[in-house]
Image (cartoon, rainbow, N blue to C red; front, side):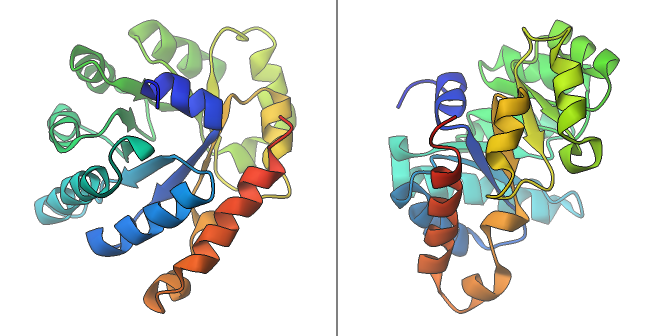
Length: 216
């Protein structure tokens, strides 16, 4: 598998996982990879230092289990310390809900891919100027497809990742509107399936997304 930037733009789907044990996430990651999703974001839980350490442990567990089959990153990265913690655990990219210059600079200093979250044209352009590689347009479902098209008209040189409300039924629409990649959370995972060990159903959900964008 190539570098993180190439892999994300090639596969176009980043699965977002939050609130699961490292053991469950590894099983979910295996189901994703087996069905065509190779990019996985494990989000930081900002509730406590213990929760943040659990995120690093989970990232490390995915890399140990799947190696180069998966391109794993950290999500909700809010501080320089979290960038360092995630990078040490094996994260190849850092995704944030906001634009923070210190987080972007540290991510790039460590040779990792920077994906901050932005909403307005000013935020998108500013983040890119700070060194970000891809800008997460968030929340995409609130902004809509027409907004993505409008943003891309003057900013076509900036790769976007639409995140929020992406489903198999609209995934291709987001990409056709100008999003280079999509971030998918709740529509790729079901806590009841995980609790029951029904990882085949998670694999089927992944397959549905991959099928939905195969012609994009």
